Every structure is written in C-alpha cells, then in structure tokens.
Length: 59
Image (cartoon, helix red, strand yellow):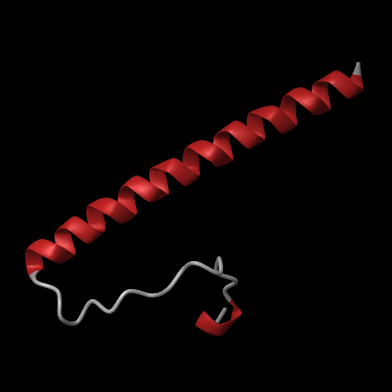
C-alpha cells in the first residue's frame, strides 16, 4: 500500500517535522500515542457493540 492509497480525514495534514527540535518531536510522539489510544478504545467499543448486536439477533 502506497501513501497515496491511504484515505485520510479531510482535516488531516502530514506535519512537517524537519524543523522540530528533539523535545518537540517527543511531545508530538506523545500526542500521537494518545490519539492511537483514543482510536483503539473506540474500536474496542465498536467491536463490543457489534458483538452484543450479533448475540441479540442470534437468540
């Protein structure tokens, strides 16, 4: 999969990291990790919801 193939939200732009200091890069990594955790939690909630719906309709 090439970068062009990735569908990104309209408000997402790739950040220019060349001019950032090491401290700024570390802060950026922390922000990205927090966003990953938020997305993973949303995925888990959606999987739980889908499983509950599936179980409901099986019975």
